[in-house]
Length: 114
Image 1 (tube, rainbow, N blue to C red):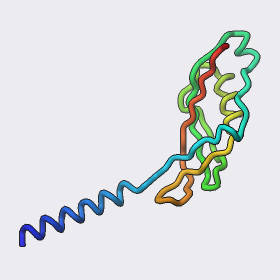
Image 2 (cartoon, rainbow, N blue to C red):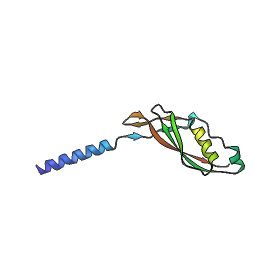
Image 3 (tube, rainbow, N blue to C red):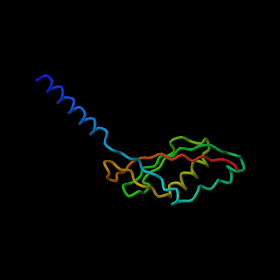
């Protein structure tokens, strides 16, 4: 009887773990659907560069619903230009258990001078 109880408890524990770890996939940027952000003129003159991390709330249809700067490049002009350009991109929506779902995703853009 004790062995059967332990086996049942283990099975229930594993089943609950599987439910808690539902298959979630974050939204993905379709980089071919938009143009590369244009370097702001003032940023070029001042030789500003850096990595900006943006957060986008993507609808179940793949459209940007909300955006914000998660980590600044250190330059507002660069942050705004990246958000404006990348916010026009199309995204593959995130999924949960195979169904499209609204979700946040992060996108990094590195501004470099060539």
